[in-house]
Length: 124
Image (cartoon, rainbow, N blue to C red; front, side, top):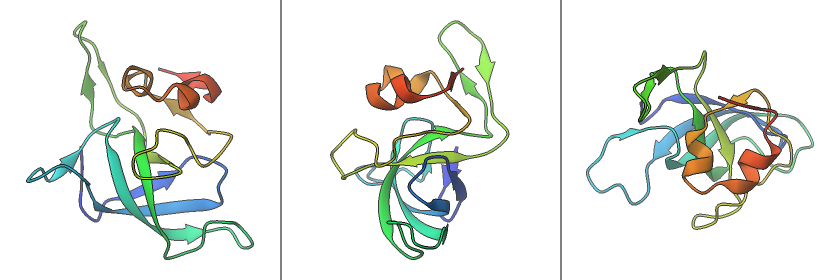
């Protein structure tokens, strides 16, 4: 579970390294975001000469969370960091990057992000 101003690792090859959660669009009164939630991030660190610059506002989906997730079969899964992947648009489920680093939660595939799930190196 992430809340406003949480710092996330950007785990794709767009050039962004860190992002800060600044909004949860369409959530109404909800203040937290979980794995699979689309969020708005402000880029806090980026590589030089990359298409994504520091201070840009982007849409992203959360793919890893330190807070454990309960699955339907009763098991729990948690990760070492909070991570997201940048998306091409606000209503789109297409990723901006082409490679994804680190493990990705299986819930991402269940939420309809097929391109992210098929390109991921590890699914847990």
